[in-house]
Length: 107
Length: 118
Image (cartoon, rainbow over all chains, first blue to last red; front, top):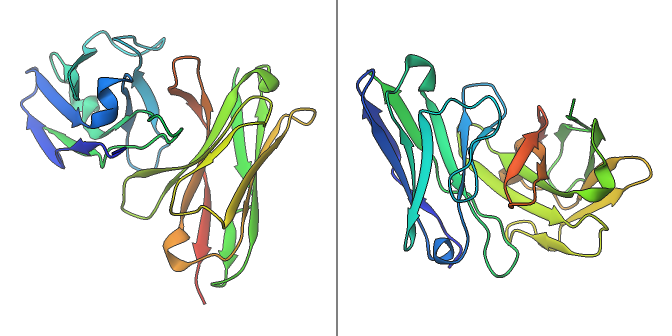
């Protein structure tokens, strides 16, 4: 299956750590990438590969993977991190499915 | 500076056709794989289609297979999406996205809105 599953919503207190997860069979073979999307804006890549951040992405964002689960961790969440987060991967058929997205609320 | 600029969106009736374009600049377009991704109003991201750097390999999501055609013109630094037999459920903002070596989408356009309605 090429489906990726995410929790619809997660909340975190300001300055605390939050983990957003993504599950799918394809993650056993391919890394996930993670995207942040704020209202009215295009998605922005925040994590790719094993645990890589594009230039300009704060180091409080990190990624990890185990078995069929990929995780995005924000260590010391800031108010500006409030957004929707999507995971993406590929499968053996060439598809590039996205997870359903996780709405992150920073309290 | 890498730029991706989509165009061609608009209002179309069910069953109609539309052709989206994505103009690329700031990088060697012919060296990169490209994708179309869409987002229905209030919904999540949905991958639509992939094309290899040469155009020889193409993939589609099941939801658009047989109706949409992705193509590219490397001489014009442009990506296209021909959309036929449009349905109400195709209403979305359509983004073009560059695919990096690791398979991630490292640059995105600003999107173009397609509305399918009578």
